[in-house]
Length: 273
Image (tube, rainbow, N blue to C red; front, side, top):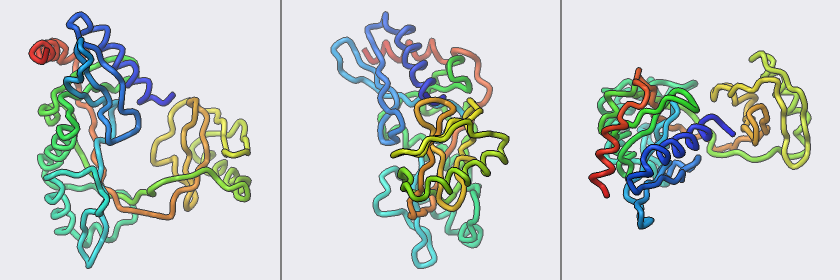
């Protein structure tokens, strides 16, 4: 189970333990689906009354896809994760076009931070979220923060980078060479492959139980390490040839005391029941 999954389960259980006496219960919902809220609160009649987002920081906080058309960036037609603040960000990128069209790596979007905050607040509010549950520890140290207070408790940033649109399991004919490429890549990170399994999936058991940084999951021209059912087990996958430019938002937690916001959240719940 990945760290963010552990934290989602821990958050849900903690809220149920803390607030069930109020006649409310919480259900973990979102998983890796960015279209869903992570947590839904239900009253005693099993009616949903509000949603919440769960963020093990640092964490991604939404994204949208852009394309270069007639020397201007535009929002892709099928981009669903957007809101009324999106045009301001695209305008900023277009006003600095030379910088972003020379994109060969991740580049920060250095517009006014308030614009980035407004995008994230809009994004989460549209999903019905009222609060963010946050921590830097996967099984400890919860803070419950109202969506409108994001700017007070998080460092908000955004970047633009190319991102493959999907992945699939490797064809049998390229498994051996892909394992070799993975071994060379991982050795540079100080990680060794203990065992490799070739079948419908190309699985690697590593000597490292710690999560690999996201940027280090990519190697070769079109290969990706996808964490499987346990912390040191990864599948080698082939990335799609579609290579879009994504505007990606991130949250990094500021110093927040343990159980921050619990009393205010209790009052919020009482007003909703």
